[in-house]
Length: 129
Image 1 (cartoon, helix red, strand yellow):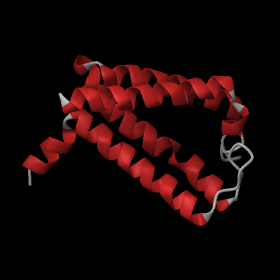
Image 2 (image 1 turned 180 degrees about the vertical axis):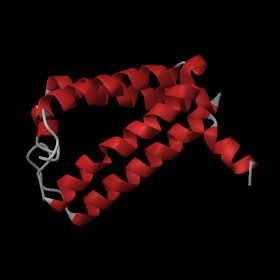
Image 3 (image 1 turned 30 degrees about the vertical axis):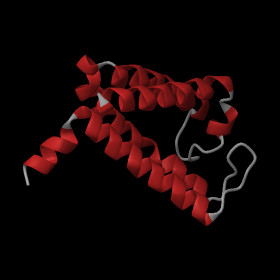
C-alpha cells in the first residue's frame, strides 16, 4: 500500500516536471550543457520522458521497467545539474548557492533510491547481501 501511494506521488511529480518542460522550456534550455546540440529538442525529449516515466511508475505492472529507466534517466540528466552548478547558470533567473546545488544533488540521489525501491531492485539488492 505504501509503495502505491509513494509511486503515485512520485509519478505525479514527474508528470508535472515533464509538463513544465513544455510550458516554459527556456529555463531548461539554459541549463543544457553547451557541448550538447539541439538544446530545445533535448528539453522536449526529457520532458516527454518525465511524463512517460511518471505515468509508468504509477502503474504496478510497469513499475519494474519504469523504475529502472527512471534511474538511467536521472543519471543521464545529472550533467545538466552539474553544468548549472559549475558554470553558475541561473535557474529561472535565480542563482543558486553552493548549499542549494548540494541539496539538488542530494534530491537527485534520493529520487534514484526511490526509483530503485519502486522497481523492487532495492529490495533485491539488500536481500543479496
